[in-house]
Length: 117
Image 1: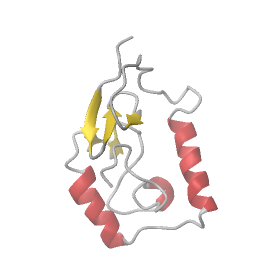
Image 2 (image 1 turned 90 degrees about the vertical axis):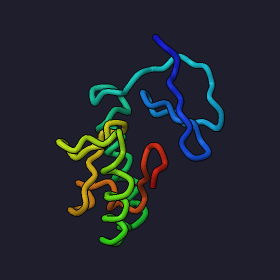
Image 3 (image 1 turned 180 degrees about the horizontal axis):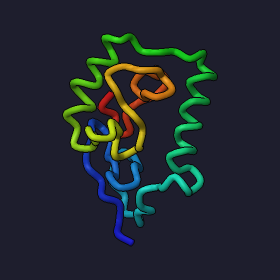
Image 4 (image 1 turned 180 degrees about the vertical axis):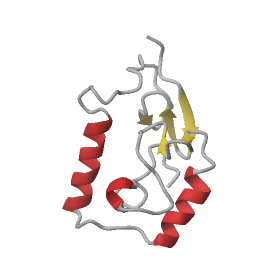
């Protein structure tokens, strides 16, 4: 297996394959992109996000903030899949509107995996 492919994002380095974040790039074997069938895969990450959100009292971002994030961060991002409306890194749905359970941006407890918002 190859090493992680780190790229600078703000003050962190992010592997664009597995999503690992660190202060300086380390040489490590990349585990690859998690799949929904693996523990901690997409379904596990979604369940964790919903648990954090519910435990925090279900806080939501304003419609204006959601639209700003979507239009300036998500939609122009190279990791956004416009056909599916999902982030290619974490697999979450991101939209300009919609219920929090179907829109990661709306859940105020969540953030971009590469710290764009």
